[in-house]
Image (tube, rainbow, N blue to C red):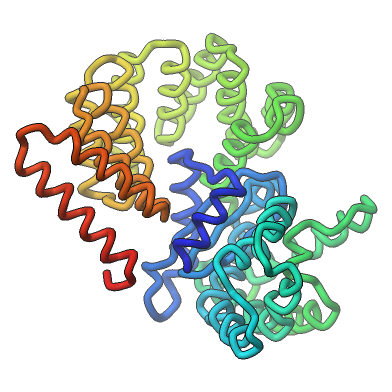
Length: 431
């Protein structure tokens, strides 16, 4: 059902594939989950492009946050508090328990209905209209009891990951207050996770059990926040060059740094490559130790058609701890654009040995193999990309296409045939 749920969600919403942002959300999610007992490796984290302030936990340990939530938070602790709440729903089996209750009442609980309920907003309404479950929505929502349970556990998850416990209520109260002051309907997250007075009182009473904790600013959070603004917010709004130029003048040193990073991306998006390069070069010179500045310089160089120079910049990033996989992605892209297809392929193959479940690596590998006219390998890589996106029928379709391009290679044919059988077995629930 988790696979079907995500497939239904992908039909309604735009899942972000930007490697840096996906990496950030996954790292934050796994940091929060690492203190939990049980199998947390099955948790999967997604980022969805939408101005809605929302997040959800779907079946199969699939958790997603919306870009609107990222830009509305003011600190990593606030973002972590929302993700901790969703992880708590999964850890306490709220969705399976809700489905078991629905089954006793003979309410159908297909993945499509669940997607409609959990996605919210226009996307959820559209999905709900396509199902027979509109009348079941209220009965399938998380109960007040489940919300209270998730609140209590999320405070433990948050503090075990070294975040302050009060970040959750600070954020939710601010959301509630802002929606009241602006006389607008509550944000999607408050509609799916309503703030009752009893709920607020329970959480505030629990806060007394936790010692005050520092909330040091997170360098990665502020840069992820800036990247979301630059890539997904309107060029006339928060993602504009003017907006970042204003923030560069901030007295907050970290905020100003992140704004300079966002400014590079906004300038690239606007086609002002010369200004983007000038800003990126200065930023990396001021802070040479931070890998994101080398990557954004490479992004500006690629936008300006200077792929060989981007390769030189990215090769150094691979040596920095924790950045081998992400650097390999950008390096392979630069190598491909500079015509070095064999080197690009080798870069991705090395990265896949370290990160075999990274869908973005397979998508880029499919492009590179296609450029090399290796069509069987290209469709084979594309199949793995769709498999990792829970689109199993599409994965099988690409594998069957790959099988028609194997030529005389018995090894390649055997490899593709074996993978087809594995996925078919997986779909039958026996994998």
